[in-house]
Length: 106
Image (tube, rainbow, N blue to C red; front, side, top):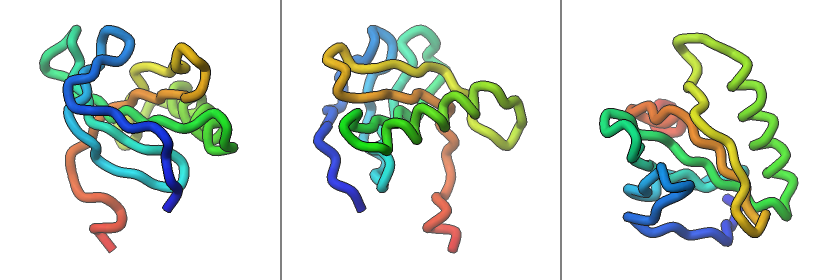
């Protein structure tokens, strides 16, 4: 599992819209946080964050681009894609789907 340089605390706000609730996972490509939508209280999002210094940021960018072009009930909806102010991180905000992970299912 890759080490990630970024760490967000519960309550932090991203883009004046996404309020971090908790860390939900980390992997080779990104670290993932659960976030509440401040514009729509009924929505929760998975916020994937990748370090721009690594090739994983390009993969996350590609994932966001591909998923935003596809519409299917079995694919997560993409809500947002942006870079940190210092351009060190890329953020992909997608629909949060509550359930077990693939690792838990195996």
